[in-house]
Length: 168
Image (cartoon, rainbow, N blue to C red):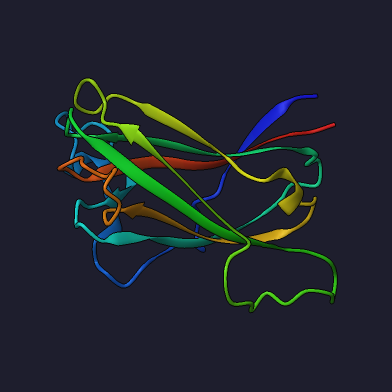
């Protein structure tokens, strides 16, 4: 059995309509301006902001599902609260991709890095039985600034959102 991680932010990822969640070059927030790739910015807005997306569960999926958030910040104090709402849809001509509501909502918070721009990694357990090989997963990933646990007075800078799982 091996553990795998697949990136789930991609061309189908769309920021919500608030204007507080968006993609920008990392060089805008970084001090060295060396690395100019895109990162997801989740501002400190005091509201619930995020991105919508979709990904497929790999054919070798067996279980041990986790959401991995790779992030950083320019702040070195406070906590950030993340939520992940999703629905897994499976089968061939059996389930609608146009459903209301979520199958599961999970959340967790993480403490700001101890130094500006240090790499942070947060793992959130997902319910293994909600997924099957080949499923399509529709999701909303947010920074929940309405949660009392979100006290970081800076943008969260997300480098990666990964689906972690085990195979047989």
